[in-house]
Length: 301
Image (tube, rainbow, N blue to C red; front, side):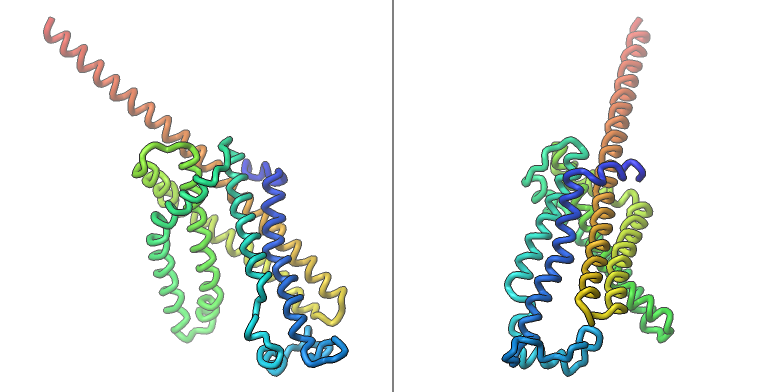
């Protein structure tokens, strides 16, 4: 875990942070500009027909005006926001793969990236989905008891659980694509190794996934909560909120890069251990064979 800190400011790490910041902040900025057009409807001066303090106090009537009279219901996100979000996500995924490949000394090939994703969907979606479903059922049962504390646990834990499911599925993808890049021979052997590397270390991976999800979600929530407390009554407050979002997204991206490097180092160590075990097993079999031949020769003599 300490070794994975190294490389946190490499070329691909900077790209990963830039891509994640663009996904979280740039898309929000473009969406806000898109909403600004709806807020100006029906006003010949070009200003907003919403109250001046709507950033601090947005009523249900204001939202209804935006949706119905402003035309927001016909174009809630616009055309640029989904396209920009997709491009930023692709940049995040590719820079993460390039970081792992560079850490292991492999060329980051698109073939391994795509085939590793298919492997992860085949190997991980069903078993991880079963675990997620059981955990989701447990949270729902806790929430239905009527106990306030358990209700809050269910309310907060459900989205975190879904994020953990996505994170674990990504982890399976990382393990699959690294094994493909290493040139693992035999499809079944490749699937078996990739599957066991995740499921033979359930406590460690579960702890890392849950801790990472809670930390990243907590930082993002803290930025949003701070912006809510600040309000939007002035330009400087909005700029401060953007700065907080930039800081939160940058830290989250660095943590994601650390997890990517940690997984790569784990794969490298696990591969080394497997090769050593294989060599010892081959040596043991050879020793048994030689001993059998020697015993046979002694008996003949």
